[in-house]
Image (cartoon, rainbow, N blue to C red; front, side, top):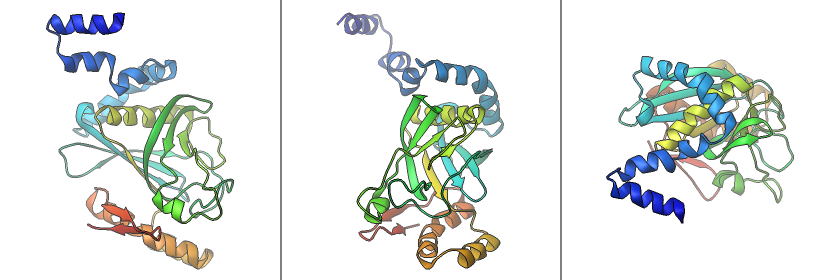
Length: 251
């Protein structure tokens, strides 16, 4: 009650609601209450701001897009201003451990890293794995194509460099990912995550065809248009998921 009265008093004193929200209720403000997030901002944010400035991207209007490639063990961070048409590559980060094999996650306990199109479902600044971003697995496609009764879940991009199906980074670079995603979330945008078996180069496509079964190759053929579209346009493809669990692209 006292907090409500204090806020009302500040409004009466002429302090704008937007400023009150910024100071007391924004997503970033809530995250900054955590010691690990404060430390991440203290040690990494000045350099990240300089990198964004060099790309002519403002933190206050920034959107974030993430691509992950399992074979290359690489995470790409892309950024842009809301008004811009195209994303710009900010940096590449090594995925420092892996589990499972190439191919989508189809059931609980298979140690697979999912493949497909997701976003960030939640932020955990107090994770057992330092800082963690929850991937929105299972999506509609995963739930339709599940092999068995349970899809599993709790797939994270996190620190601490250990994994049984997540995307682990070293603690220092996970700060970069976490901070940028907090900033994007604070701008009321949800960072999109696309996870692929590999970059669909001619060489890699041949490798997939020669070393994996038809089912996996059919799935990869289904998600490849999202990769190809972004490569050409530097903006994510529009998509839906049909009743059979297939991605349908509409660009």
